[in-house]
Image 1 (cartoon, rainbow, N blue to C red):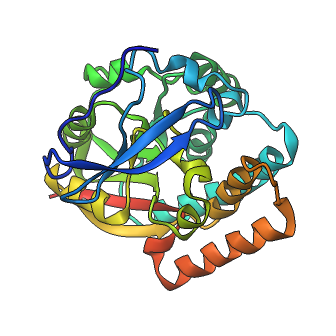
Image 2 (image 1 turned 135 degrees about the vertical axis):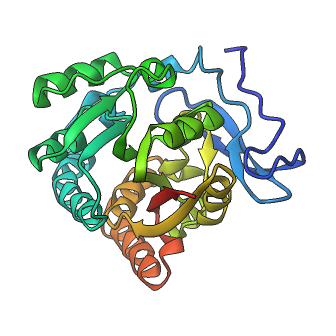
Length: 298
């Protein structure tokens, strides 16, 4: 594919000097290698030669892309579905403590499990999803007719949302400025923006390097760390008021990462590595494989 998404200005610090961080294959679909670069000023990382927005579609075309396909094929994805049930309760309890209203916009709603769960808890839920396949699953399973990203970006979904959530979505977004502007416009006074992201400085990322599944190039354009995400949020007029680990992500990501290696060591070595990562994040949440950031408008 010839058209590339060119990044010549760092979205975090506006710097223009970059260095190679790592070459990472697209293990999921194409097996093509992509370069992850790092800003020399603020250490923000990004996929330097990702396809353009118009040409990224085929890179999502995999039954193993679980949020679009809802696959339960194989041991890893079967375990993922069991873990998700626990994590829905975990996310709900974190949100419940915010003591905010119940109008929720879930961007990147996928096949609808989070949106559907929150609906059962009395939330007025709207979803945004790009995949037609996932939108169909969302409507069939949970009765939620998700809208397109274009409708959100056009301002068609209105405002006054008490909560806007993005669960592993922002790293896919091509227009960060546009999305943050709309977050600000769409949130009610005292509303909360909840963004979950992989952490490219996590313990498991350092262990697995180019095999780390959460690099997920070229679908993931941005490879945040706690430091670079907080700088970006501050630049966009938001403060990070809380951070939470996603405690089971390290186990799923470690299993998928290990499966990419030729010398596949699933059990017990992979679980030992995941446990090390989990314990490391208990000592310091900034070591977690994934983090939930809770933001408010400044």
